[in-house]
Image (cartoon, rainbow, N blue to C red):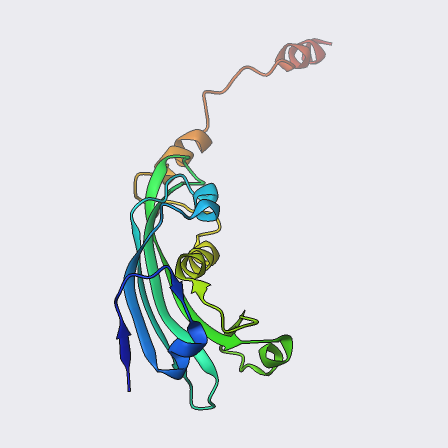
Length: 175
């Protein structure tokens, strides 16, 4: 049985959602995500969230899906602003303690939730987006960034300058 959660809510109960084999699909505003805002130039608009909560074949409770959001970052190569669509592929095991985290299969990242209390969906979304930000954002080669031709022009030999020791060599030849 699958339940669809499409009513706006700022808090979710991951264990309850997993026990009910539920989907969460909604838009989450980026405007209140202060930690994300500190790492990018601009984080406005909304993140598209599509998460399935359920149990895998080994009965581990999991949260799987995608979170995507547009952000503006600074290109590390040319320092110009660029838009990036950050996509977080979420594959998380829901655990209540460190022992459960250690027993979690390797394909899952543990999400430690010490109680069944509701969790901020925006906080989960922000965490996943931060983890998925590019480490050193750069334009694709050939895009609006410095091209290889610009570097090649700097490497071309310039006009030969006169050797300052040429006069000494000429004196040495005379004697």
